[in-house]
Amino acid sequence: MSNETKAKVAIAGGGLLGRLLAWRLCQLDVDITLFEAGNLSESKGGACWTAAGMISPLSELVHSNKHIYSLGLKSLELWSEWVRQLEEQSGQDVEYRRAGSVLVAHGKDKSELLQFLRELQGKLGESARGQLEPLDSNTLAKLEPSLHGFEQGLYLRGEADINNHRLLPALLRVLHRGAVTLREHSKVNCEAGYISVNSEREQFDCVIDCRGLGAKGQIEGLRGVRGEVMVVESREVVLQRPVRLLHPRYKLYAVPRSDGRTVIGATEIESEDQSPISVRSSMELSSALYSLNPAFAEARIVETRVNCRPATMDNMPYIHSEDGLIRVNGLYRHGYLLAPAVVEQVENQVAQQLLQVA
Ligand SMILES: Cc1cc2nc3c(=O)[nH]c(=O)nc-3n(C[C@H](O)[C@H](O)[C@H](O)COP(=O)(O)OP(=O)(O)OC[C@H]3O[C@@H](n4cnc5c(N)ncnc54)[C@H](O)[C@@H]3O)c2cc1C
Image: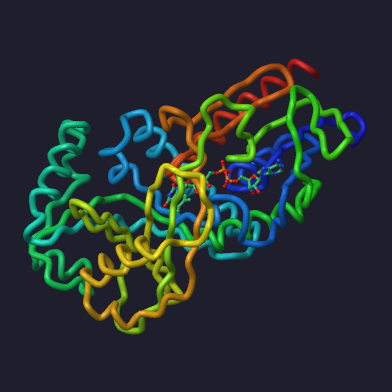
């Protein structure tokens, strides 16, 4: 089919959803244009750059519901295959690891761990068996030798994580090579069949709005939830997988990367303030980290990141489809957990819309 007769698809927003969608839609014989307000190669703008990249349906189930859990399981299935394809196409390792995750609590907070386990068992029923493994100090020490002074923990089998600072550039690389037109520094507006940049209006067969918080005003109730993370570097403490600390006040996760750095986070504050991390948050994250192993005291803080998670009123993903326009948003704290499953749904809706215009 020649370019003139190919269907034209516009994707607004080059964050996690926008990049993944552009990549997956390359498989259809369509002409794709990706519009991004900022610069696609710089780690600024989207929440996708700030995230820790955990893909943890079990850990998140306590604060969410079975729908998020099922989408998360579907995404885990897709990630394995998509990562294989992406690494092959981009020639880049995106550090996808499926080594489960570990939850710990200090002795005095033992009830937090028990409560967490009970809630998960209650929500999962029989299927909890085989996915959740209570750990004593010996089994914990074997799994995570760098944790210090914990008598008990919980192993969540099958959870994964991905290095977003490798994934996002790898996606960009394949988009550069593929048949996608990339339009950076293009802050756009979306309506059915049209993208507007400044005063120009361009027509498309299908417009997909993936602008995250940039779509505020077009999606009722869309809000930002501030999150702060720190990146630390330690020569002494090496974690094997994501570790979460349960504490009545200071929740913490620590996600190790292959370069010796660990992403720790994250605060969750009902605010759209994107100013730098507060002293309070950095103290709370640091002291929770120190309590995993006092040797973390000598770690160096190499970076801090702040951004807002795009969330709907009920914190559930939002997919709206009408002729010529699909809006996808509200991935909240579950972008990496849900993106493949959500993208697959959107791919089907795009295919249906394009069939109608063919
Ligand atoms: C601190 C923190 C930690 C997190 N940790 C995790 C985690 O461990 N696991 C997990 O699953 N999720 C995590 N998340 C959530 C995840 O990052 C988000 O759910 C995900 O990034 C949402 O993807 P998105 O593509 O919808 O939006 P974004 O990633 O925000 O991308 C939106 C893109 O649209 C662009 N844009 C905005 N307006 C316009 C416009 N008008 N025109 C053109 N482009 C525009 C932006 O520049 C941006 O590039 C975390 C988030 C935060 C903030």
